Each structure stands twice: as structure tokens, then as C-alpha cells.
Image (cartoon, rainbow, N blue to C red; front, side):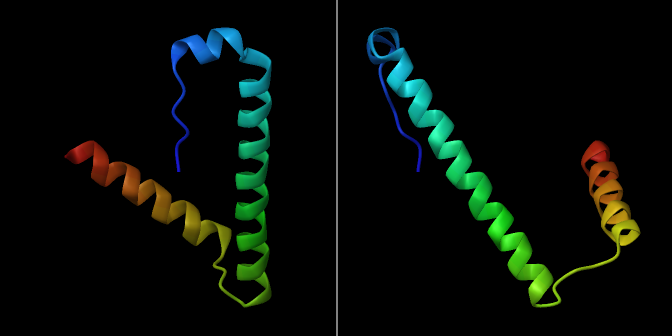
Amino acid sequence: MPIIKSDTDLRNNYNALSSLCYTYDRVELYSLLRDGLDDVANGRTKPFSDAMNELISRRHSKDEV
């Protein structure tokens, strides 16, 4: 959920807001890493080459639109 702050808040409380953003990003990163480790533990993986081919295919289909 985004946190909306005014430009005055940004100017007056830059250090606190910067710390909040850093903490939020860190929590989000840890959550994504935990999800990835859960996928590995539960066998929800695919070979690297398959994943890369899928990404390349998606990129090409977006370029055609």
C-alpha cells in the first residue's frame, strides 16, 4: 500500500521519510526472498533456460503490440 506524503513533509522530514522508504524496501525484499525460498522448498522451480526463454518471449510479444 503506497504511503502518500506532501512535498512539505518531504522537505521538513527528509531523513525520517528516507529511513521509512529504506525500511519498507527492505521488508518487501525479504518477503520476496522468503517466497522464493518457499518455492524452492516446495519444488515450484523451472530450469534457468526455460525461465529466460519465457522472459524473452514476453518481451517480444510486448514489442509487437
